[in-house]
Length: 471
Image 1: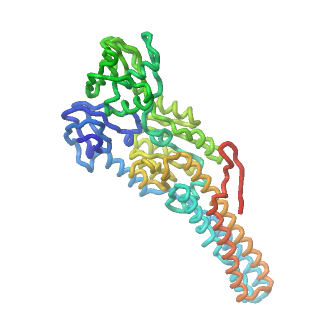
Image 2: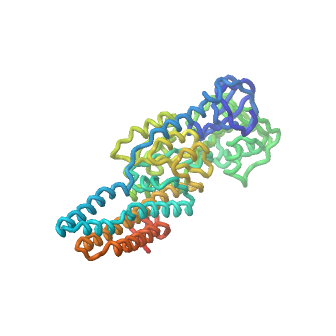
Image 3: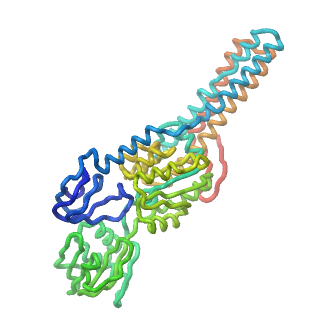
């Protein structure tokens, strides 16, 4: 396997050492070191070293294909959903027949029955709602959100539960410097500079993060030597600086930190460490607040990452429940366990391991800018920009669209009902009633097209909620 390649099948590493990115499979952002004899999973991305492996399974039995099978199983059992137009169809039909029947009975004239039914146009149900939904989908696409069907707009508008993946969704999916600790008389800036100086010639993902954290104070390093899966040593200002694992940098015991960490020593003496964390999206907290404002009852995180990390991120952004260390099958189980009262449920994710959950949820939203193809294909909606706030924007658009759709249907029904009552007295001949049908159609269609406007929103700013409906 060459650097940067996607591992095609599950297997065992037989020669060399490397670091792999399994975030799209497990949800854990930190790179995983692999040495001879350790398993590697299909779908993981190889780091900066080449290695040899032996396939333990065929492609069809590997981890990636297992996830794809879960997606297909979820898609084959869609949840039942009643569309808005269906809820009005039966009452409207009964009302039309009652008015027509009463008119016939009182007038003793069967023509009166026909005159009433002629103006009982079903077009508000047939045309208004679909046109409003298509207009809403058009508005969403202009904002960088692809919604695959009108039914998804309806479900988004009434969503009661949101479930988010962590890595690449709430966070940016790449590690940045989080904490610097210094001992033995060194300052934090000195420890960070020494670590960056030793690592500056390395192509490791953590080396790039170190250099990016202190680009203007990196000392010159000579005699640089990188030991794969252990660390880097270099001579800086005449001293031997080591950066890497605790057993590599010092022969003395070092208290380890439960994070992705680079430990630093100078001439064999431990001087401090630099820890890394997946960078939180700055808009994440605002998105959770906006969703709560729009009536979402419950927001949860379902992640494959470790419990302490997931809980910390959830607390920082305002998430209600955390389900950590979940495999793809377990993520599906969490979504299926959500009660009927808490549905529709929306799942938001970006990785291969999120694809089955996206297909299982009532609505799946994929972060498509940098996400996995499998996630986008299994999702009902795809966010094309690397911006989590578009998730709350999608809900905002859906709610505005459904308000327009309901208005257009009710306006059409109200006009038809008025015309039926007038026709029941024999005032409107059948031929004139047919012309009035076209008027009703035109009014409801024009009203439904108002859903295309970006001026229709239920959110005013990020911190307050109000209802705004403008022409």
